[in-house]
Length: 172
Image (cartoon, rainbow, N blue to C red):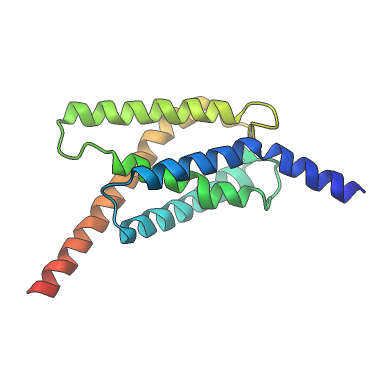
């Protein structure tokens, strides 16, 4: 009976995560107008790899923050696989590449504020919250998030450059 109650409890506490995953993926794929399938695969893989590497230390080793419990959780795989990659897709799909530097900066600020607000929502009590702070706090996120978005943007530009070189070689 304990297994059934625990299993039911785990499903119940995932409401916020499941709603977020469904909503973010729906928006990312329905609004995508610029990203190719190849770029989406690259973004998805990069995001999962980078997040896993970062969380391996901050979450698992140093317990700065965690999803659900301090242990390695199967439920947290949903966050690694399907939560952040579509957000990164939206960020890149809507990025104002042809705009002025000031618009690009404002875009970064908007996204950083949005990500921080979402992070605060994930700290809500169950069943909607699923994220917990150890020694980490929102101030660390405010410093790290712009860096992570910048790295994502640089990775995307690199992928685009590789794609363009590949097309150029095929033609030439």
